[in-house]
Image 1 (cartoon, helix red, strand yellow):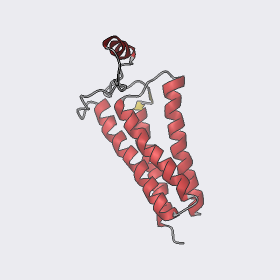
Image 2 (tube, one colour):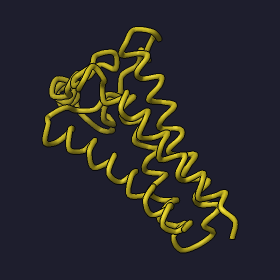
Image 3 (cartoon, one colour):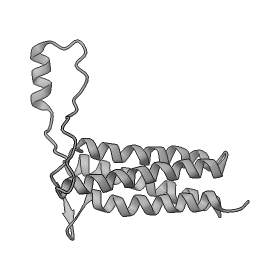
Image 4 (cartoon, helix red, strand yellow):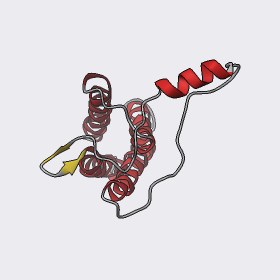
Length: 152
């Protein structure tokens, strides 16, 4: 039972990541910084969930649950930023500048897409991707935590 739940939740994290990349590359919607932050928790869920199928399932399920939970909490914050409830980060991200010439750096800056965290690029039934991620991430986290609490 525990193994099946871990597998189910790991597949849930994988599905969310694949969906995010689908929106990014097929839907031409580059992610904002906060969208990236939400992905990290699912990457952790995939890694720990996969490990939990083979070693220390209780511990790995718990750690995977923390990853999914972190994604859900960031999604709550991101949803608040989108709805203008919270103030979002005022920093932006860019590629490493390394040994670029000023002309190459300017070209890199001009080619980078401007993606704001406080704008909703897509919504369905009045809910944004961050809103949907709240429910999905918290549900996946609950499955991981339940799997971690199951008796031997």
